[in-house]
Image (tube, rainbow, N blue to C red):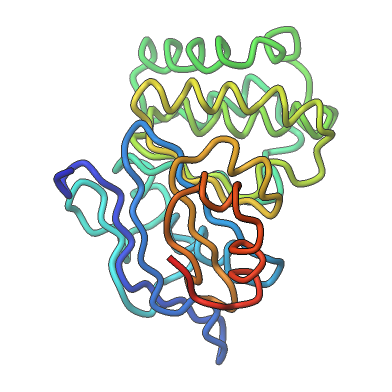
Length: 242
């Protein structure tokens, strides 16, 4: 596939203070496919996500979307370029209503287009329709996750990065969200799913990476990892495999 259609992360390094938390990470995300990054706690996954979204600066490397480098751009510029990031922790405006949280996500769009975007997002998460006037802080964890996903999708991204989809959610909620992400990918959106729980991610993804101690220790088929737990275990321990 031409690089023009890809999200390409090339030799990205991220530092926090004196510590290098992501070291020379390279990966690709294809449109219409789910790619996953697995790894233990403290592996550098969330720091990489924040760098992709423009929240943390990359010390070196490039993040190219359809050939355009996003490194150095502000978060709103990254999203406008077509890369929507859902960070860990379900970050909402807690005292605003669900409806207002969604309207904030599309405030730069013309009114008619903004309304259409919100409606399309609500079609994916119809559970939110009767709760549009409720303050976001009063929702359950699963409902809050639906709101942040709806916010990201309302921006009409070409690529969607989701950090720890299942964190703190009941298995029944995760089971509800997985088919929606599969459907979103089928519409042509490339999804990069960062997960601690391998069974969730490997059931969705075509391509998998394992990140440990800030470095990629596996790059290859998600099915291979699912079928060969010893490879996954080795990658979590830091051994390079591909």
